[in-house]
Length: 295
Image (cartoon, rainbow, N blue to C red):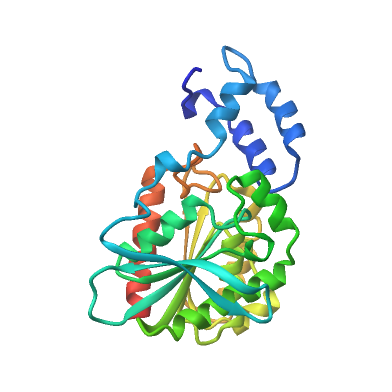
């Protein structure tokens, strides 16, 4: 099968994938519409293979990395889904209490990529917890299509409660210094924004291409915010000007970055929407931001 590169694939294909990945169209419609772009030597099969995530081959930090102490834990979410499973990861050798980071997945559960990001946060010197909001339905099912289907079966507000419960669990963890921030991607970006609304004692939140809270909720935010957006992500970016105006109006601490020429999901290195320079810069900014606000 021909190996494709970004120059051979139109922006319309990435926009179509965005609709599919966010449940705007089903797989059958996605494949049917993708056929429009199967021209000039491209096939639907090659486009599908190009667009779908490649998890196992893209892991940056192995699950058994000896530099880390990583394990699955369960914590209680009484207002959400009950007992929630999560990946807890922190440096293997550490004598001091660590700042904490909640890592919030996209709209498909705790898949291998988000577990990898959780381990990256652990390697950066934090105690990181990546919860799986699909736990009440059996957990991440092993593929994103079924993961999206399962996540649609859960109430969004109850899932928010699951991540708020994760914050309290990590804050009280004996290896944590009591200061916990949150980073989230897509759905997790919305969760990160909403945790900033709901948790006045949370020091820092980093939404990646996340939907924004209502304007009337902005005064409740006390956390410092670091917000990342892809320039080509018109769907999410549409809400940013009003959000930024409200943050300015109410004197909130925030930094916002729009990364030129990149799509929604640009940080996810398992799909071709990934942009290495933007992703690495955004992650460096994220870790530096947490080091500043969680020490």
